Each structure stands twice: as structure tokens, then as C-alpha cells.
Amino acid sequence: MQINVSTRHGHLSEASQDKIRAKVEKLSRIFERLTSIGVTIDLSDEENPSVDLNVSAEHKHDFVASDRTANLMSSVDHVIHKMEHQLRKYKEKVQERHRNSGSKHQEAPVDHKARDL
Image (cartoon, rainbow, N blue to C red; front, top):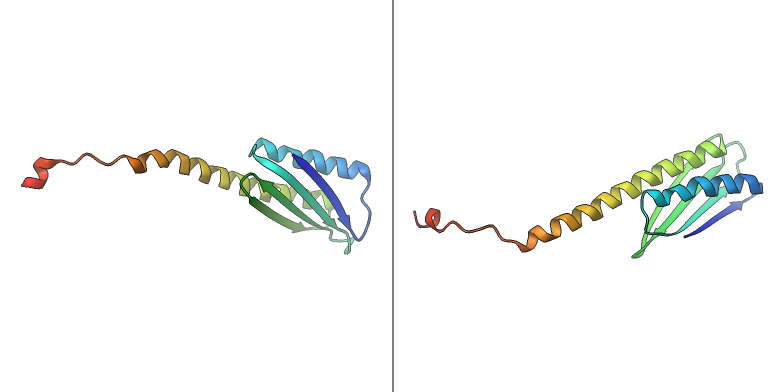
């Protein structure tokens, strides 16, 4: 899985980028089929930095979350929380689809006695 941290309109220290990578890397615990994660930090408004998180999963599924708060790390935490919610919801949807796929092919037994009455 590739993790890319990029910055617009400013510079972010290598230590901060490593912290962000470590936090974002934990998303793979929720959904293991992630192929790439991109974090874009916009520092054009230094008082309220913007964080965008783009996650790509297998089979061309892309997830996006963004946030803007007064603190960079709290923005990162909020974005990760939003992404966790999206990934959990998608994972439940996929699992539910697989659970119910077998029941579509099985028909309910026909009660011929009830039909004849």
C-alpha cells in the first residue's frame, strides 16, 4: 500500500509527515484491501489548515474525506475518523452482499396442500 503525504502552499516537517503516515497507515486494519492513501495538506490559511484524505481500494473504489480546523493534527484525526466510518460502512455493505448472495438462489419450498385449498 502506498502512502503519499503532500503539502500545498507551505512546508511540513518530516517528523509531522511521519506522524501523519503512521496514523493513516492504521486504516488498513479496518479494510485490508486498500491500494493507496493520499493525504494533501493545504497551508494557504495557516490558522485553519485544510486536510484532504483520498483512499483507493481494490476494484476501483475511492473514498474521500476532508476537514479544516485550527489545529493540523486535530484536522488529521477528524479526517481519519470520517474515513474509518466510510470504510466500515462499505465493508459492512460488501459483507452483507456476500451473506445474502446464497439466499437469492434458494427458493422457498412450495406448500402444495395450501395452494389446493
